[in-house]
Length: 341
Image (cartoon, rainbow, N blue to C red; front, side, top):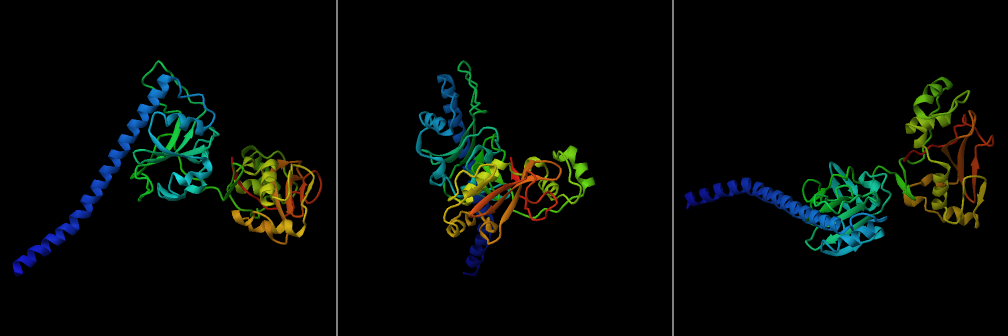
């Protein structure tokens, strides 16, 4: 009996050491096989579309996916506002956990120039995918070698909603996906990625500002402490500050009772007290915008060496300043927000 117990114990130890490795190897092989099969079927579908002349010519991803579904059996197509009906809300891509609810457009796959939205798809073989289409996609119906490599960026999960939802395992992407996520944005409004919350920039001297003219896109420098140039320095370049239009769009989002803020003058909000209370500031973590103190934010636009345009969020009024009105570039009251363009 003792010998039997010892033998069982040895078997148990060996099993505990080897079974997890065997299971892991099986899973790796299963993921790899599923990815290979999916890629082959996708390539075949794109080749057929190329031969039929239906690979190019779409202006939206949705139109492309509808055509693709005729050649690659699909069980569900999810519109841009319902992507989580087709894809996991959170994945691990590289070493980063990505909130997929923020992944909406081709630029979230690294394709800034495409300008198209992402569409979700569930294929009949159980694979789920997010697809962005390139309107500049080309085709040659006389060639059987075209696979549509320049036509789409696709992130797909061979196990659907099942774990681990991790890149290199069940989660794969084609070469046009150079990144995944909108996580680099503090918040996003109307397609503009605001990279930071409002923050107070440190001023730069006239000498330091002049040294930035050739590197940061500044046209002229203030005679004293230049807080606007400090905002440019903090964001890396003048083009990384929001335009007047982007700030107007932000204001209209934060305060929905104000319409058509525009890029000049003053906009009024009816309701006075309720205007400040009825806002979307908290939804993007823009906590300063619903405080009792006005919020002043620099834009990228210079007026001259003494003034640059900024907006004052102070409902029931929203003001634009910059044409030698209000505080100039030497004022420490204005805040900066960086954007990714």
